Image (cartoon, rainbow, N blue to C red; front, top):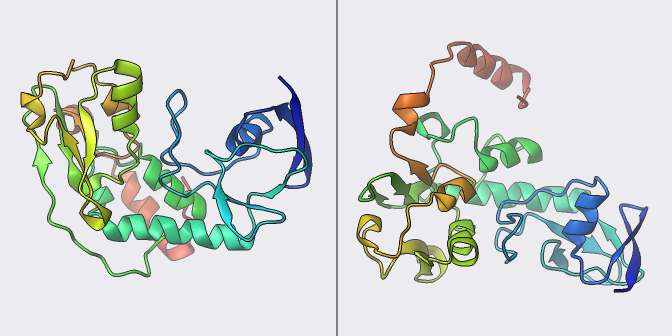
Length: 238
């Protein structure tokens, strides 16, 4: 296999043909934020957080599904990209019902981490407050569609790793949502092996283990002080 040479953020890179820009960046310690990317399953470029600028094209391209090419000159963190990423995260928060304070994944959420990473502390867009359901029909797990960002990690991990293909995407556009089986309650889908891979793959608190919140959550009063300081001093870091 031949090797391609290129530049990422003005750094000389050499990587095998067929690698993606995201792989090239990660192997060389160049951070690019992602949400739909999950190591080991097929990339789909759904979240658009990993958009990069490539010299010679006026389009922003997703790093996770764009293969490297000889002589590419790529920028991963320009002012334009920072603004696009911040806007993308704002849209995710305004499109769903992401109330971190009452979420099982609070403090362990990739969406929350990315929001902090891109400097998002509010959204400029109108909240849609969609009327979405919660499916608790499975014996071990639950899915809260209010917290789903449609990254399809659950769909791909169940299909490509477990081979059960319990999950899929229904409808189009803003009406899209994740379905189990043939739009059946999760607990009634015979194909589900209860392996929990979808739970581990979910970047938010959308798919969770039952009892996780009440059984494991510990109250931390110091967080109140952290929130007050963070709001007053704009210290949006952990």
